[in-house]
Length: 110
Image (cartoon, rainbow, N blue to C red; front, side, top):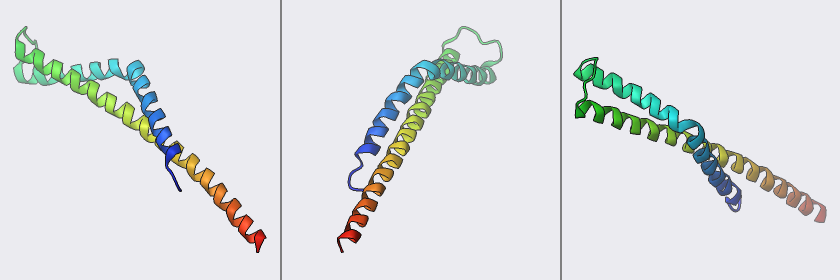
């Protein structure tokens, strides 16, 4: 394959679609799951009825941010990979057909 333009274009389209999907469907669940994990961690360290102190709140907030980041990475990387694979397959089909036509033309010219 001479250039990887179609695969690169598919990667960019997939990344954009992944960002949109993350904003629509991944942001809130990532925050919820991270918050629940943070509550479990803070509850196991400080006791189950968490008081209004600062450290348990920081633990919950940090785990919520981590949950959002992990969700974003999964959506963006997954969609980018899928877009790149589709672009690479389309490019392989395109250049495969061109190579077959060139080989056929060379064979006829002999």
